Image (cartoon, rainbow over all chains, first blue to last red; front, side, top):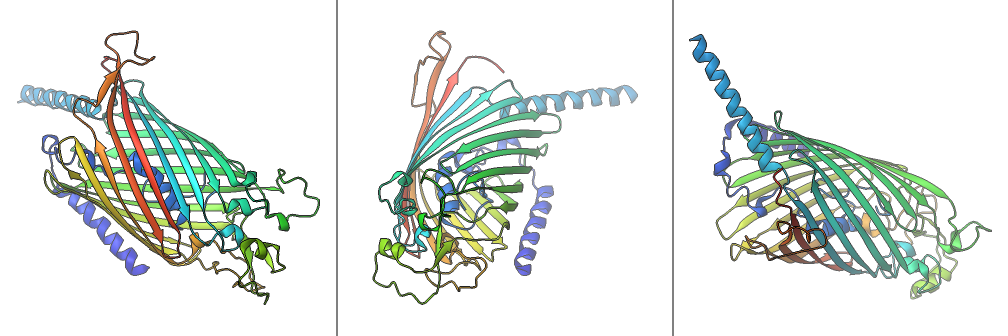
Length: 73
Length: 423
């Protein structure tokens, strides 16, 4: 667990450092603005994310239910 | 020199104001957007928690939903999400021994409302939301808020969110475990509460012209009733029920109790998403999540979507998801819990297993919409009409290593109401 947390912290710091190196202008974002490049879940995926939260113990970090709000796990 | 510096300041200020106007224009909703969604889910397995970890898990769930996003002006927006689940379950039919009784069916209705406002100068977006959900034995209320900050160059975004759920449960126990004189089958045997609190942080970063990533972490605290009142747990009491049917086991004298779990649970999921635009044909969408909780469950989830743009308006997306988890410290299969156990469950959702999900999605979204027509909301004016923007269909097959199998088919029809107004 400690080793995994260290890896995640290292990734977070790397991403923060990257932010100062990146300068993509709005007119250069034609690929990034594609519908399939969205970083959030698609509306149609919400049904699958819901049943996965019911049928598995792991929830969250995916825009879906994290517990509560229903008669589920 | 003084005049030149002042003129330069004024020019910078004008450029900043124009950039803010462009950001608002880019991010603001201009028309009412409507999504009509639905899904049909079916599953079966042989480890129902209602009958102690064995027996049918057959269930179907039909879920219609509608999401409406309404722009109030260029900075504010209201969103509504209304839906229902129509559930038919063979396992909950075994809460009592009356097969095909009312306990076989349930309906869950829910509504969520959100208010969002964008502030151009600090590139800040904040949102408040609230919701209600009602099913046969649970009435849930929720509130939440979020704050999102985007950098001026639009390459970095940080979002902080909080959500709380307050669930009121009516307790319906398995029929043979109800207190004597507890009344008709329709009467609850008591009530209890479950409160869930969630804090989330999402960090999104553009790395190159084709690559962007996000890191999300949540902290979830749940208190109150965390077990399910109609789940049975059978114990290692020496009574042999091998070869008996589910109903015969329920009617036997094998020791059973109502599922009992601790009244506090802490859950921590951390997710990483990476999207890469490979070329005009392929996009790579990858996701990884690590999960851990104080029930001793840890899990890894990996998924890959590969949208294929077979034309500018049609994309086909094959996807695959792999999930592996360890068992809860309170889980044991049917009949294996010791008589002196304090907490116990035979719910296989909390067991150790591997699951796989495969599927395919198809989306059709032409540039000038699939069609346009008049509706009761747009009939009166010739400048107002409804546009059928896109249609999407998705099928997934899910199987768990303990034998549970399910499939789900979903659709999403997207419309917008063109009013011809500038916002």
